[in-house]
Figure: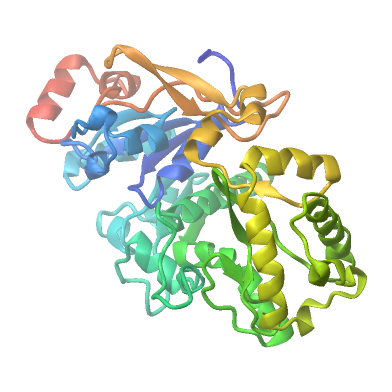
Length: 417
């Protein structure tokens, strides 16, 4: 990739002191062109030990997780708990525009690096703190993993089969919501700084960020006094408790098709019923349904079970591609459920050059990465380079502060970098 092209944040520098709770925040700012400097302890960030690993070889320099969320960043090592380390960080803060961190509340203050102190070093600095429950409140001092956040935000209650305990989405999601929201709020603070000249402290609660994903359930309660529950491949909120299948098995996988009532669903339901009839996979019951007056609120489990039985049989007789192609022709709401392989081969993503090749000379090859999701004609988001090795840019970054190679050797021997 061309590292010379600039994004909208290219004049700005970010000091990234986060762990997995905030990696995505720094990655988004880096994709927008900011010079994001990932600061790790001298031995390396413990998150480098999160798998999976390149060729399944456990190695802190081969974590695919690290590759994904720290691409586009420079990397330095620094022991901020040492006096000299805090002094170096202070010098970096003077030349930075943003600091993002995910330490427990009070930790930065205990080092003399809280917002009050940072703003004295650099009045325009924006400090973004990403924590499980925010800086205040009765939970603020609690530790929490991603699964705890998924539970406390309410989303886990909605995930899983109705006859089994709640589950979380397989890959950690709450941390990603927190990191993404932190990036947005950091840019809001930046906009205010551009108009006022004032920096500020952004306090991000991962619980609150992840809670935003439950608004569908929240509004069902507010409007209908229906408490949505786990339903697996089904849905209950559109009816008085009937289990409606949303995910349908087909020959080579699954498709998604929601069945609605009223004006929204009448056309799609009718077209699907006619399609099924043309292939001799309907019956008198399905042909007799008045779709214009089909009321999901009055639907009984007996009626739905008859409809579902016919639809299951029909969908199982076709592949995802057959269903998708014909649904497009008929303008029916049917969507294939993509596997990772499907995504990698998706013609839409390929046409937008979404997949990018990033050089990893230390591995002797290039690796395919997903590119930025957003395009802007004048200020593009860019994927420029791989994630840094441990201390890879120490000489480069500390050299900007006037430190020589010999100075760094002394600092390394004393455990500062």
